[in-house]
Image (tube, rainbow, N blue to C red; front, side):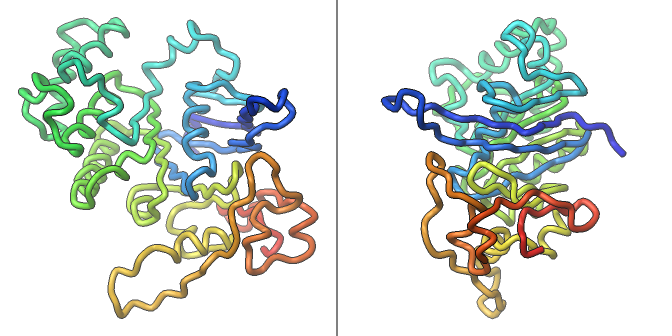
Amino acid sequence: MRDFIVRAEGLKKHYPLSGEGGRKKLHALDGVSLTIQQGEILGIVGESGCGKSTLGRCLLRLTDITAGKVYFDGADITDHDRRALKNIRRNMQMIFQNPYSSFDPKYKLGTSLREVGKVNDIKEEVLEERIKRLMEYINLPGDMLDRRPSELSGGQLQRLAIARALLLEPRFIVADEPVSALDVSVQAQILNLLTDLRKEFNMTMLFISHEMTVVEHLCDRVAVMYLGRIVETAPTRKLFSGLLHPYTRALIRSVPRSHPDEECERIILSGEIPSAIDLPKGCRFAKRCPRATALCFESEPELTEIEDGHYVACFEQ
């Protein structure tokens, strides 16, 4: 078995609400445990507000953790201070959703890339060689570095964001919906680029998305999140063919058909997502689940291995 690069145990992130005297909290993450192996791309899917981006930021220690543990390359980094985190930052990078907001509009793009190297004490000649090599990988001419972000298209700028994330040759990358702000044709180019770079650099990645077809194309394993918890996880092919959790079924069957004659049983979920402040008793999905029983409203199911590598939190299984 390959080594685990990232491991989370019982991860929680709660945000106190202002004006409530600390009595009420928003439960962004509420007990997430996962592992990511060397060279693996783990996809995280779920509706907006389920905690996907918060999970990525907690794994990178870009935000404080309420409870639980985060391990990187075997070391517990949960309580690392800023100085200790700086020593591992070059091995953990992030690709953001909107490339225009992740670059300073005042600076030329070459300046933004070179600043990353300078902050991390990379020798100038080494830095310039890496930048040149990465520009070739992302198939952009070198004179792009003399332009400002507003002079590039979204796809071009996202390519440079990927190059910047790879500049320090990290061991782990969090990609937070890196193609959702792009046109469909450009999405395909970026996904193909990530696939090629994954092979070239043996990248380990957490890929956050709400687009199921993108995740199916790119990821080795998938974890499905609902209201701050993982409700199902499995190797990609097994998850898309198995569909054990009712929420996973609804997510995948909501994907538009590729052909008008293609038959697909759509599942329409009724009701609203429960509040992440006042969490319901029992299974968090019970009020929207077409198969919920009395037990579902009383007890919360644990994530249980149903078959090799396929885990689901559902009393139905």
